[in-house]
Image 1 (cartoon, helix red, strand yellow):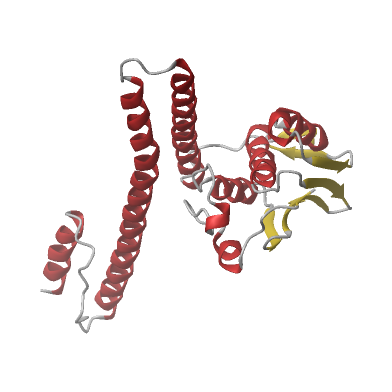
Image 2 (spheres, rainbow, N blue to C red):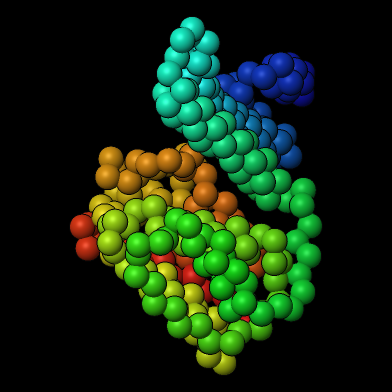
Length: 267
């Protein structure tokens, strides 16, 4: 009877019912343990299902906004006798929203690969300071008008260049995006016998305490002062990449004063 009950409940789990529990363990010790293991398994499956549903819900919400905007601009562009100047503005905004959608899709795929460990991290030695300079040059159109102070030690590091490039790109892009129009950014790379430290400080809007506590959650975009173009996946991706390199990231921030991102890697 106990085994029959277990088989019946296993069939329910197979159909997706993760609410079932074995409430009256039998007297045989081995079967008692089997019941306990069953309950633990179902609880874990239920948690995974909840996370999956939350993730799908969040993804759907994130796709909905740019898609609705794209649809709106497409309809506007179909209007007859639209002035050329307005047409160019609408086209530019259309491109921006398509780009945002493309970045969201790309980040979801990257994060999914990393979290499911379906991607192998290949590592080799390279100049970390040179890579950071490459990112700074790449972002130049965005930081023109800001004051940059750059102090980079010569640092060799063994890691995955492609993934780490995404880390520096995200961190520095945020420092630009959430800065004041005439603000400043300090980028400092140092090392000692055991650790490599990158600090990126901006003079921007800063973060409140809740945002600092939740900044690495998927799709979290912070308080209203920080809700600009983006999809809230960048820092989740950053954290995961650094974890795969046995590295850490933390933020120190004061609202209306600025923010410092501190990234630490083991040598």
